[in-house]
Length: 99
Length: 140
Image 1 (spheres, rainbow over the protein chains, first blue to last red):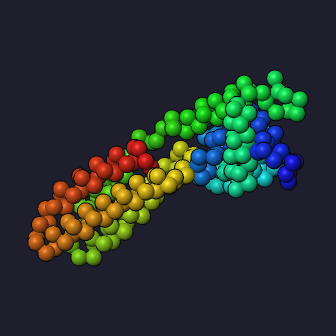
Image 2 (image 1 turned 120 degrees about the vertical axis):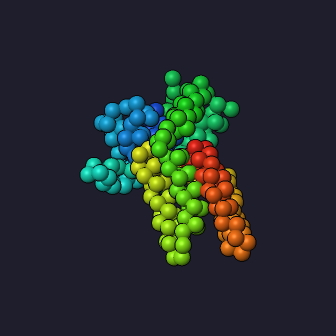
Image 3 (image 1 turned 30 degrees about the vertical axis):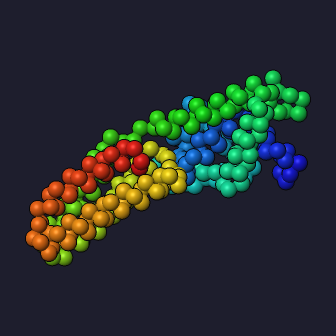
C-alpha cells in the first residue's frame, strides 16, 4: 500500500468508479474542461456529475475553477498533478490486469 | 464481477479500458465552431494585407490583429468548453507553421521594401490565410 490507501501497483478504487474513470479519461488529455462539456460528453445529469466530481475533488485529484462568462457562472475542471499520476497509474494497472 | 479485493477481473478491466477509449473519442468529435477556421484565416491574411498600410498604421494593425487572434482562440475555448493540452508533437507543428509564416512575412517585407514588389503582399495574404484555415481545422 502507498499513501492514500491505494495499492502500490497503481490500481485506484476512487478512480475506478465508472463515471469517475470516464471523468478522468476526459480530463487527462486536456488542460481543463467545462462542467457542461463534461456533462454532454458523459451524458449524465448535473447531480450525478456533481456528486462524482466532489469525490474526485475530495481525493485531491480534481480542482475546480469558477468563471463568469456572459453573466453565467461556469465551472472549469482539471486534473491535479496527483490526479494525473493516479489516473495514469490506474490505467497501467488495468492494462496489467488484462495482461 | 469483481475479485474479492474489489479489483476487476481481466474482462472488466478490458471493458474499463474500452470505456476510456470510447470516452476520449468524444473529445475528437467535439465540433469546433464553424466561424473559427475562417475567422482565424481572415486574421492571418489580414496581418499580411495590413503591411500595405502606410507608416505606423501597419505595425499597429499587425498588433491589433495578433491580439484579435488571441481573443479568437480564447472565444473558441469558451464555446467548446475544452482547453486542449498542447502535446509535444502539436507544439512542434505549431512552431513550424509559425516559423513559415514569419519567414513569409520577413521575405515579402524585404522584397516589398527594397525591390518595390509591394504586390507580393496580395499573394502572401491568401497563402497565409489558407495555411491558417487548414491548421485551424486540424490543429487548433
